Amino acid sequence: MPVAEGTPEGEAEVGPEPEKEISPEPEVETGPEPETEIYPEPEVETEPEGEYDGEVGRAEAEPDWPLAFKQWGPAWQLHVYFFASIFMCIAILSLMSMTFYLRDRRRLRQGILTFTLQCLLFLFTLLRTLSLFINPYLTVYANEETAFTFLWSLALPSLTAAFSVLLLVFLDTTKMTLGPPIFQKLPVLLGITAAHFLIVMMSEVVCYVTPGSCKPMLMFCQCLFVLYGLLLGAGYLYTAIVVHRKCSSGALNSDQDKIRRIIKISAAASITAFSVAITHVYSACSEFGIYSNVTYVDAWSWWTLQTLLRLEELSSACIILVIAFRNPLDVDSKVYTWLMGVMKTSKVASSDNEKNKPPISSNLPHNVKYTDVEKF
Image (cartoon, rainbow, N blue to C red; front, side):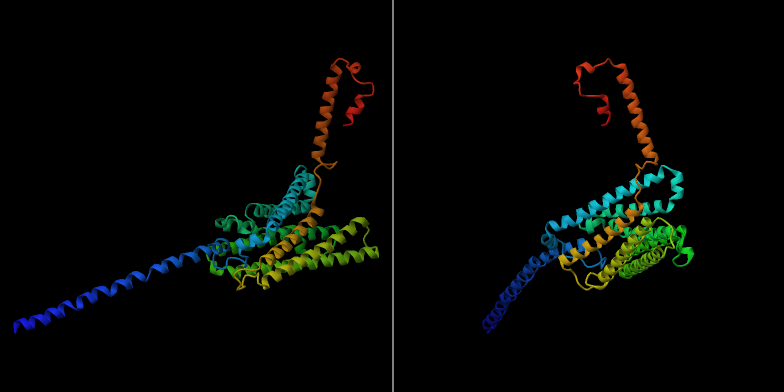
């Protein structure tokens, strides 16, 4: 009896033990291995989005840059370096024009409006040149987004301020009044310009500190820019119409060629200002806008829009340059006088040296004369 009782107990103890040891092993080993191999790959593919687009809705919708570069081909380099080079040339011409006034205080006092126009044009073209050459559309140095966004954003207030001063120059030339007289004073206009700069800088600081409040601030700046452009377009259109009527009726006794030039430039400035405002309205309300839900926009559509915007900015800069450019080598300028003095001094020195030299006319051909050399 004790032996019979021991045998079933031994059988019961041996049976279930191997079943408990075998079952959990395959469940633990097979589960996590395929999961760790699959998930890292999409993380690598999504890095360019954070690299170029910045933080939470930082700016307008942009194309998928790696794919866009392949689609554009040389069109990307053509867009960037063409506009950067033209803006650089205008900046150099503006700087040359500024020396026309800086070397003559009397000229500077008389032409303070034109000199202010030159400074604003130089600032705008310089900022655009640096942005496009160094970090075009934040595609090169993504980590330096804040600095280059400041450079890019501060250019627009410079352009609107320059267009405002140009309108003030026309009103001062034609002795016209447009709106309250207080707005036709340079200190008041510069104060409005400074406020515009301050608003843009504050919006960039807000976007950097609190990215969640970025979109409302950027939309406010866009609306302000569009409103400013519409007012300037209306002002230039009014100036062109009134001056044309006065010129036709003979009320203006000034130089007729100068008056016709003002009419043509005012009409061109009005068309450009309206065009810039309409393009920015389209950009804000379309898929390129700040509140657009599109992650990536079409590459060629984005390229076309940016090319149109740069052409409008370039047209504005050329209109301003036509009025603001002053040749530093003008006959009445001190630079010209200084160069002529240097040339006369060198001529006198060379003539004295020739007098002290022994005659060498016998060694020269008979048809060569000193006067022929002096012509060059």
